[in-house]
Image 1: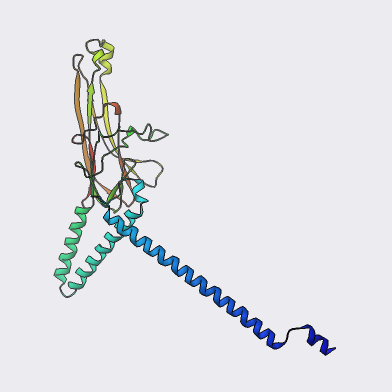
Image 2 (image 1 turned 45 degrees about the horizontal axis):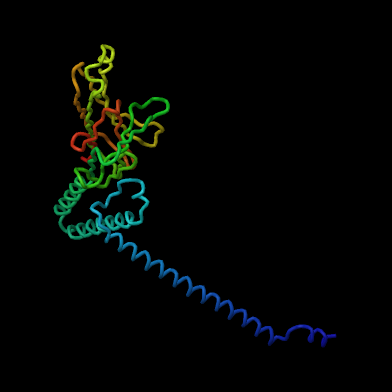
Length: 287
């Protein structure tokens, strides 16, 4: 009986060989997997390094995002991380060099704070290169007024620039909290069509009395934008006038938080003249 069981099952030597083969196969699989994933990781690192280097070879004057697409670009993130790294290294070096001299350390912080004030700013202008668009309605419950200006020129080709502030859908998005000076000017141009010159009735002449209003809003986590400033002009063109030119400017100091968005809205958007020297919008950090 015992001899039958011995003949039916594997011997201890065969069991050891079988276990050894299984262990060797597992080790071989792990080695192959390790080599494969190591090779893939090296390829990804090389690809990322080449793409990062290509970002700095692109001919671009600005390191700041101008719209939502730029924020999703890998190149923008690479440049932003490099700039943050350089800034941290400069701060660390200045602090290490000034540890033995408190006065020097205080001066270094003062210089850094002043340099930060210069870097956080934006000035965007009207553009004639493309058709200016306006939002038909800002608020469904009519708690906000006017039509938002969606098209601004933000490149460095003209007078516009962005520094640590980016433009998205006509809104300036704030990155650093602080006190900001916000300003805007809009240019209104009224021109009577040629076929209507000299034919305006008294009623049509009264309709030329238009109220031009400029609003500056702040958009936060709240459902509705918050009105910061508004300014108005009420002008009446005479019956014989072919055109009229008016501008509205306003500015003020406000506290803004990170990711706050500010934008400009106007009434009678058909009268807006988006000339870069006449219609503009900007913000800069003062404290």
